Length: 142
Image (cartoon, rainbow, N blue to C red; front, side, top):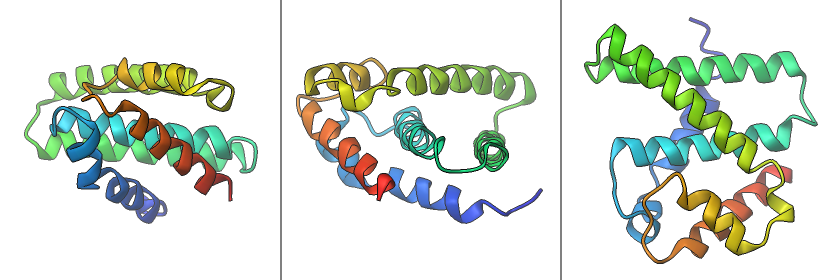
């Protein structure tokens, strides 16, 4: 497998492993919660860079990203039927997130909070996570 995008993937994983995201925002620190936050990071990345980069490069990054998730599931001990079922579910969730964040800047904080809340079990500090992803978007734009 081509490891051309391994640094990109590892950087997204590193952002997702930030313990503050779970201590302050999420009600649970489980694989599924971490994966949802990883999918949000990746969705915001694609949302920003769809206007700047070559579509073929973005497709390669997309393919590599989900191949890495699949490999992670296999390393965790899931079998082929289970991996296929989970990957289908994760890709559907990803496309749903991508659709929801498409007009992120036009939504108020309450709507943004609702978008995040429909994918994650959050504690009461939901607006802080909205601010986190808003700042992440600003970082990507720069």
